[in-house]
Image (cartoon, rainbow, N blue to C red; front, side, top):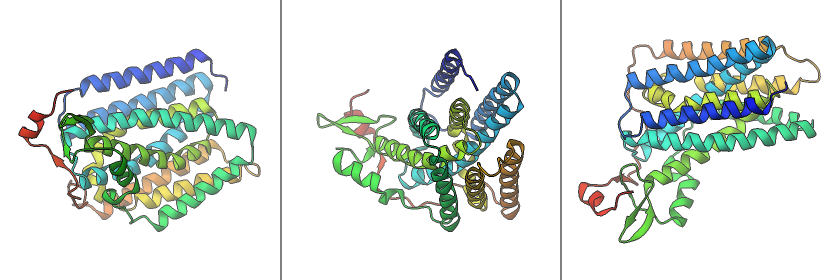
Length: 330
């Protein structure tokens, strides 16, 4: 696949423009409602699908299917990110009206870090063929571990990342609007929102260790890997506000995600023996995802939306009016 430089620059420009539109649309802190989250989710999914149609038309069915396989993998694995975010926000008491700003900045960081990981992965695979089997083993191992620990959610308040941040970075224990830093007694300190952003960013890096090898299992074209990742990540914020209150209903999703990781890992390991057709690979991925989602919704039918079940840590709280007044704007 010979992708000219102008195509890369055009895609990056489109992504930047879409992020700018999102930022302007959410420049004021407010609670994202179900209708708004649904509309943005449809917009981002249609954007990703439309790009896939363009790839299919310009480069052929095989590369088009590879893009869609990667897009579906990244989109499905992203649901796991959403559930972790919901637990982090609930446990650390992040006010709902400030959550979009954290996720927006988190997505910016995710795009940068994943771009670096994709470039590194492409270079490794191009120069060291045996790395393919390392990725395959990692995917199978991760899938098995996800299956074994599917009921473990961890405690964000007790995470090593948060402990290290609080140890080395001066910070206040109160949220000051959307500020990441503020002044207390003349000293510049971090707010809990910055700590939450760091925690979310590190979490995404950990998830990328699984998702990047997973997409390389269905395509070795760096352009497709990057664009499938980018369009899947761009819709994460809207997906969070759409699904955060439905976490309890996706009871079998972890099993499905584990099965997808194991499947693509085995597919990658068999690359030199049998090259699994992209159509078959895409069909298996969609099939696993469909079965687990439908089975989850049937098993939990009758249950409505409710906040994620995560105990409040009590570490942070929202600043009172008098505390906000004492803090300079900016």
